[in-house]
Length: 390
Image 1 (spheres, one colour):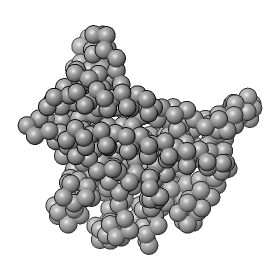
Image 2 (cartoon, rainbow, N blue to C red):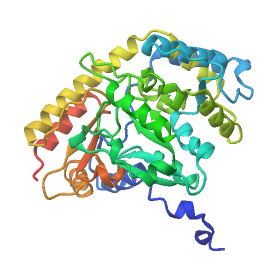
Image 3 (cartoon, rainbow, N blue to C red):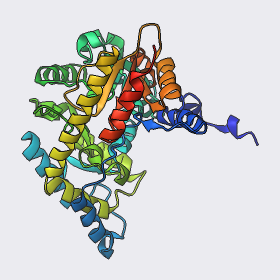
């Protein structure tokens, strides 16, 4: 049997997943005996805080958490989310109807198009951006329309430039601030325009916000839901992965419009059985417990940011220190492409960075660097880059 011919069209149309391709190239270089410093994937190197791990140890030993979990998440977890949003953003949420637990925010982002996109519908998404926005829309049979993020616009989407026919057919709009991969942030005036755009065009906003707590120099990003009437038009995804260094734990949540939350919950109840409740118990500890670990995380990444920004600027690679995220978005040298420069850096220095076009064609001309190694290794990376000829 030719399995290749049996594949669904939706699979054959997908490009290789960006980070899987990076892993392949990294493996090739490692086989040559080159010491790799991986600044490619945004996976925090700092361990999960001990008080969260301790709560997980307690919970996993408790038989009450060994049964099937609630599809929507433990009410105690959803209350912790609502309390955290109230304290952090002054947003009131009903934990029973406006909060939904996710097995990591990626899962919810990938599934929500199934609740709203029919074949022929349009899903809008910002590009360069997280690849799952586009693939989620395509998996649901929709047409994915990229809204460019351009440097001259501060890497914010130009809402007025979206073609009328795309706006008319659009059901969802995925966007993400603080932004991966550019590190850009959005302020109230933009979110107000976004809410007006969504109301005028009947588009559901799906704001992906996992980096709101990874910010520097005293800056604190806002939530999209802080804007008046935002809850009428959309939801916000959040994750414990970056804020509490829980990437492998797979726990996140969606909050906001109750009808959208209910629709996503209905999809999930037919696909998965919910997040392991012991992990949710640890999530409650993360959200409700001592937040000193978050401040420590900010201080650590701010130091790393400053080390690498200074090194890149000395090399002649201009980069603006981001206010948030642990990413640097770097213009490649004149005459190079994103992929060519990333490959050159890997082969000549052993440093893994991500080509910007892997986040969409609009990312061409840039590379992304994740600050996910300790200061010693980061300084070593800076030393290696200083000898790079381009």
